[in-house]
Length: 193
Image (tube, rainbow, N blue to C red):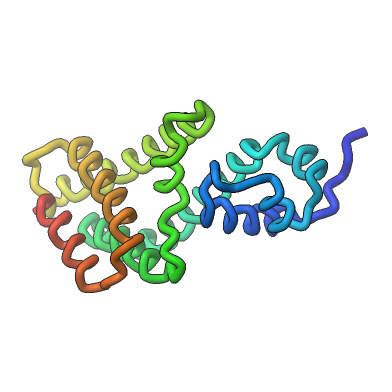
């Protein structure tokens, strides 16, 4: 008979996220996770399998949280131009609200672990494919609305925007000047018009 978890999994994942976000995967020890979650090592291993298992669940939790928050913003928009602007506005707001200057957990993980662990690489590739598909849909809609130019395909612009988002997230770790971040976004988006 499997053991029943006697802890709040969502709360444990939130606490583990804070540690992984602050220290990165390699810098986080099992003792850090024990301290952050108030679980003993055997509970962590029984519930998550390993540090990597816990990290993968943290990444998935973080991805879902971010995706849901972005979705809430862009669902309010009425056309592709508003959608792409709203998306970048969300990223700027997230950067400005990051008082500890931790950056995006997924972008940080991409630079730290993507080439070291096949499970993480696969997660990152899936995340990238989802983002590219969303961006391509937005750009394609804008091109059909005759708001965005057709100098490049929607797929090419999606890759450009995805790369720009990654760069904006990294820039935001050291630069929290709202006017400068908005200027970067304005420059990025000019290519679509």
